[in-house]
Amino acid sequence: MAISWRTRLHIWFRLLLLQASWNFETLQGVGFFYALFPGLRKLYSNEKLPEVSLKYLGYFNTHVYFAPLVAGAVLRLEEDRASGTVVPEVEIDDFKEMVAAPYAAIGDAFFWGGLRPLVAGVALFFAVKGILWAPLIFVLLYNIIPIWIRTVFFSRGYRQGLKSVEFIQRHKLPDLAIHTKEAAVVILGGLSAFMVFSQLTQHQLPSWLGMLTLIPMVMLGLVARKGFSTLLLVFITVSTIFLIGLFWADVVQLIVF
Amino acid sequence: MTLSLTLGALVSLICGLDRVAILQMMISRPIVAAPLTALLLGEPLVGLQIGVMVELLWLARLPVGAAVPPDDTQVAIASSVLVIALGQSLNASGTELLLLCLFVAVPLGKFGQYFDRYARQYNVRLVKQVSAALSRGSFLVAEGQHLRGLISFSLSSLGTYAVIILGGWFVIPILWPYVQHPLSYSSSWMQLAFPLVGITVILGTINVSRAITLFCAAFCMSFLLMWLV
Image (cartoon, rainbow over all chains, first blue to last red; front, top):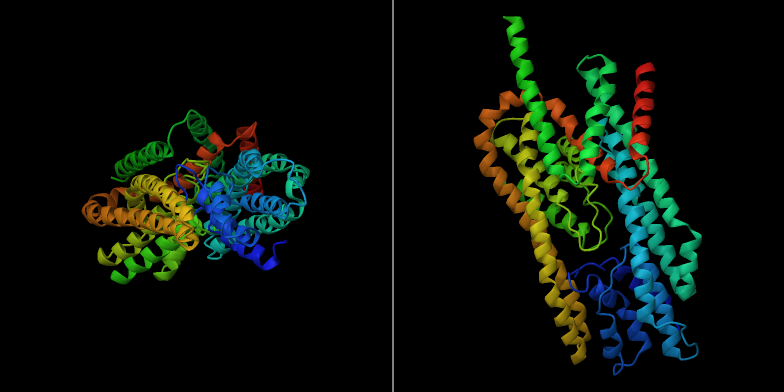
């Protein structure tokens, strides 16, 4: 029995609540059961349903935007198993385990490590200029890819089942993640230059001074690489600026009087 | 005052849920959450300034697996509420007050990590309850238990918001007369320092070969272009 598009849509919407009961024991396990339940209900009788559902309560963790792809493929495998016409090549639990971790790694690198800083950098250009649309620009720019992935990948997963793994391989997402991160670094470099330049212009200070900003920035970057906390770096930087400010005010006062 | 705090709590709840539990459409990012709060309170530019300062601070802390980053969402929302509400009661405004609110709110953002961890720990018992419900054949109850997790995350968000607001409400009026003047000497530079420190942390932690070289090249090129044009 095929799962209707209405049920699949229901599952897709439920996947937006995947992490509602995120916990340290099964991570997204309960959420994955919750999302798939409308489909399982169509496939299995009330007698068999508890047994099948309980299997989904175990550990499950993948990137939240890739969960629809896994869900779609699992749904297809369940459909095949329930109909008994096709014998799945691997157990559904094994399939889930096999794909969840690599998809999580790809998603974390691409979305959290690359796309988010990239789009934040672009939106901050507008925000620094005082343009109130900046938050909207951020939300719209950022969500284009996640919404596309959540929708198209879910449908692909359902259509292709096990073969959906090949679909992911074809898109070369790990390479794309690296390029997105590189683009993010370039955008953040441009943003830093823009903020420093604007500040110097505002204070009518010589522009060349801005190039000196690179020295503390690179030093702090190297310190951050050693594992120092952001809070500590903010505290050190802000305290230094505060003390320099006080010292400079005293110097100015001495010169004036 | 009450209206400001309530509106802030409402945004804190919605954005706090977007952070982990539902959607993940990034309305929880400081660049969105702070201006949204400030817009509701009638001073969107304050929120935009806070958003710029907080957005990049913890962006390098990825929510990977069981890792829980500090709650920058609540820091941004509560700071916006504090600046606007305390600005009215202290009859103060400007970058200095904004900075003081952030100095108080940023360390308190660590509480968000504890509350978030507690919520996730609390949700462990939902697994057992869902399992028991399924064994009984009570499917509706099992589905409902999953949604109960939203309550934990909501309370975690509101708890963090409350801690920052209460902390700020007690500390800022005491500190304000002492720091207002000294801060004025360097406020604009400190405002610049926040996003730049965030960027350096991203640079230090981003997994890109030659990230610093790439960054320096982009910085110099952009700077020279702005200088020459």
